[in-house]
Length: 391
Ligand SMILES: Cc1ncc(COP(=O)(O)O)c(C=O)c1O
Image 1: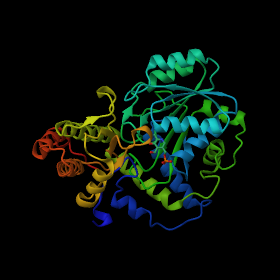
Image 2 (image 1 turned 60 degrees about the horizontal axis):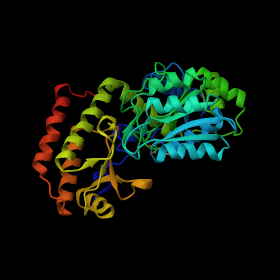
Image 3 (image 1 turned 90 degrees about the horizontal axis):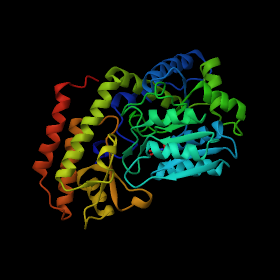
Image 4 (image 1 turned 180 degrees about the vertical axis):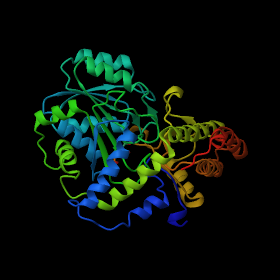
């Protein structure tokens, strides 16, 4: 299987369009000159549209984890309380990063397959009324669970005077996200997921309230100081340190593609493709890890049927069928596989994914009817052809 022919259905990195890949070959320019300023202006304009905010959105040459760490270091002080509902690997990782920086993390564990509830958030803030911040992972990539009540969490955080921080790394660009109207103070996103960009660029939107908190804190890091990124952006339209210029070209091209498609169309495309995947998987006898009402539209975690091993399934799927899916993480290692429904996902990719997974399961003894699974997917996907995606 040639690398180019592999269908990537990982939970990121994901498929990147030819246009975006080509843009990486632009000239390496200095980051203190007019060409870079023009590039940054264009990026900033479209980032605000995609984040649905008037805030600055800083661009870090870092993977998502780097942006999480930068946000912790900038907006929280040692000893301050941070509330983190833990419902999978990435919310646990956020809590761990904060603990390592001396933040007093209050973890609230959530039952498997569900997101944190509004009651839990209310209880947490009531128990820790002096909490400096509440940090929530919007889409738990490890379990395929999405929180649908961020606006309510934000209101609770505000009632208690806490900053509201959101890790939207795996979902921005693939599902609704309203930074300003939901009142998100710090929103973190990654390039290599629903934005369909190459890794390693991450984005952080910063409210005035968060900025004031960051200035007061005088972050104990030079490189990971988000406030200095905001200042450079405001004052000079630059980054404080040398950025990954080729990735900035890709970001500019990718954001323009997203704006051309339109956010509503893009969310819809993700939702319809995910619905088609879920319908086909149900037909194959696969059970999603997430409870029905909380299932993500951008990453699906499916429990392995008895007798099918993770290594054999994913190895065969990749080698024989040319499709890469992700394994489980943490406690779910070997128990689930994960299908990314991100970025450049399309009806064609869903059909190829469904057919390959169905055949592969049949090869491994989990008998299912590929034709019926495909027809279930086609049925759902017809919603897309009624209003074609014009990107
Ligand atoms: C929700 C979430 N947070 C954080 C990360 C870490 O991002 P990265 O691997 O880019 O450092 C990921 C990556 O999958 C993620 O899905």
